[in-house]
Length: 325
Image (cartoon, rainbow, N blue to C red; front, side, top):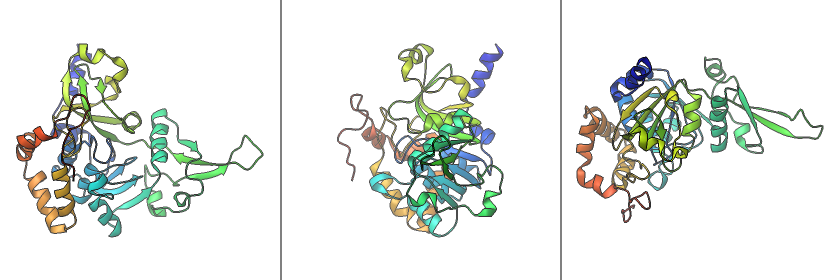
């Protein structure tokens, strides 16, 4: 009975999940990639709750990261890439924040960030790789010596040393592990037993979840144990890895959720324009985040006709014929 009650308590609301697990100053890993499966509903709730000074870690990201930075929630960032594809090859508020020196920023390659999360998931302090040799990633640091002395920040960006198992010249790069306080993800399905199933590309989501101290998952559907036990090879995370589960249909909008809906070209184009101007971006936050008290209100604002246009084909997993300009 106690185990059942514990599982039941994991099913919660956006407000309670954020309030319980994300504090100002937390290290937060964000699941998804550019315009695919961003945990947008969680990002909006973080902004509404006024959480600040977040240390964000992602292997690559897009819309959720950009909105959080633009809203002033982010103090520090470790990432490989921030962009919204054709709609913003480099995310606008992300770029502005770095150009203005508003956030601390450390860059790695996509592969290096994935390896760092893998090291965290394996419980090892660092991981060796050949990735980055010959590049400026090894020679240029974004964090100051003062930042390096802070708790939960790696004392060095990386270390290059000689392979100790050979006498020949063989440099190896050691990357520090990442262990976020919390990872936030959006998935297609969560079983009533708490099992998470992500359809399509998982990016670094699984490693990010396993490396974190806590995991919040929003999802399109809560499904039966019978459903989640069919095709068990499709499941990604067992219940004991997940600390909070919230059913949030269209919780990734305006990004895509494979098999359910496509990204919203109209909204992403609009966002790119308003994000270029500080005053217009503030109006955007007032209209699309602060001015809406619930995700239901958000979907009402998006509009049923737009949601219908974005609905994915069950065959391809994306919206056929969607105007993407």
